[in-house]
View 1 (tube, rainbow, N blue to C red):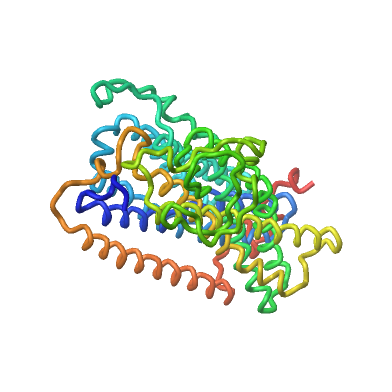
View 2: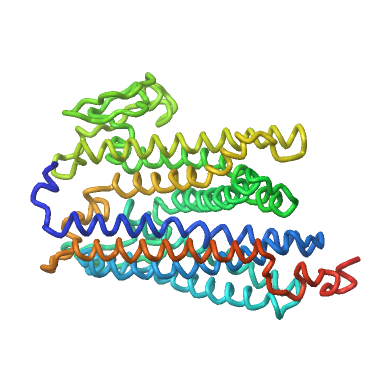
Length: 465
């Protein structure tokens, strides 16, 4: 254990474990609030423009799924808000004037998203096609805006700015500099693409499973094609943005980059280590590719990279946490290239046959792609959060100084959170399965321009022409 954690407050480990669990749970729901609603709108647009009842049925059903997941996400997000104040009063008390700015804006986006999602779902039985479609567009925009706000807060923790300190206290705040901090652009783009990739592959995986079971009608094919195509098309862009992000970490967060590269000592011609763990100051069990880490960092093999030895011992990650960050980064990269290979397989099949590849192995891979994408997302946040330790606000506030000092056993609260979240997760799955069974049984309620009432009955003649 390193010096910063040797005399850690009694509450620190329990608070970190609770925060990690609730964040890991909540992040699963974020892509559905950000990107799933966009996919819903794409199908809604296709339905109106092409008078496609299968697309309309999918859009209507997906909107109901989005509503369920939005409600669960609102609950888990609210818990996180309370945890920020209860578990980390040192952060909120000292830097709340700055750190709270992105969350204040995020609250506005959250309410806009909730309002327009309600209008969109309510409008299925009451609105004409085009006004109803446009009611769904703000849901997508608000989801993206809310995500940018949360990422802005995280970026500020990684690379703080926009505050004036006097004797350790905040005496001035520049809101725009806080929001658009040095990490904002690459973190927000990286997260936005990740949301679309995760949502796309997870939704496509559901329909891939159905296709494996023999349901290859147009409805299931369309439900697979739209989200899978969007996700697969964005993977190459995400890999490029990921390289951009890694380069910015090298330039601005050298201690985190040293952990990513599991680099004990500063030097040039640094190899890229795949796998491996740090034991007694040495890297063991990894596969090394000479000079590759230096080349990726500075586009030259002799590029010098700061190692862990350049980080003062009191604020240096322990070997176990260094290994955690490094392995999480490796898994994130590996899963990204697995998804890229799957996307290329799909592109080749579409180019040759203009159809989904018939191979059952492709469908098996597509069915698993959502879980693979989700693992990649979770690993990315492990790199971001664990790699910053032992700082809560890089260079300004240690995590041990941010945690609560209230004399209460937080392990009991963690146990309660585990029980409650497990119950919420199970209930969510049961509700979604119940909805699926009703849909499979054909128990859809009618909608004014849905499959039971063809589009021609709702659209003006000028639109139909």
